[in-house]
Image (cartoon, rainbow, N blue to C red):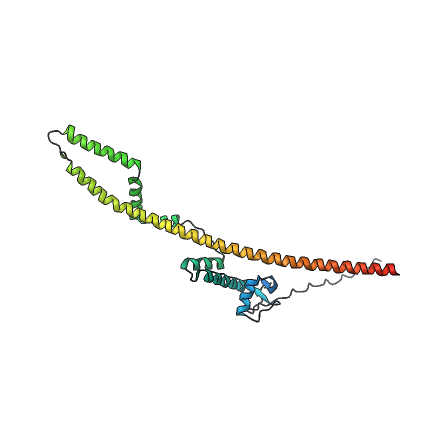
Length: 248
């Protein structure tokens, strides 16, 4: 008879220890030990919470808050006062939002009928098509009043009616072109503000990356030194063991 092997009870895996955030006092999944935090951010945390030690843990939400405070302190120390654009960049950095946008498309979507008409008139008035058509109109006007209607011209020389029409056209066209130019200046200003915000956020992100790299490199050197020291200890033990055997 074949013996039936009794099934061994499967060992239940040990539950992973749940760490508690030292700041908010909650136990979350995304917890980080204090040893992995950069020294500058760690100093910012200790400044507000002196009970935060190297054995403490912090959640990523609270860590982002301290990162935001650290960046804000840096900008305040460099500029002295934060503008609305700086505040917007800091808030987007805290929420991990994108700042790149096309302000021209946004302004074009909100144009009124008068602004669209002003842009069309300004585009047409600053083109060769307008110059050629207007020159042809003046030439025909002068030709009609000098050669075709010699005896009864409706606008004889010196063409007072034509001068009046030209003056009215210039008086109406000038403010319309200025309206379009003002809108173009608004577009340029919005584009410059957007470029400033994107460049400022990129500078802050690059500064964070440099600090992270410096921290990782320093930790890596410490680990390499620990490994090297462990190897030296093992080599010493092996050499002492061999010397003991040869002595016998």
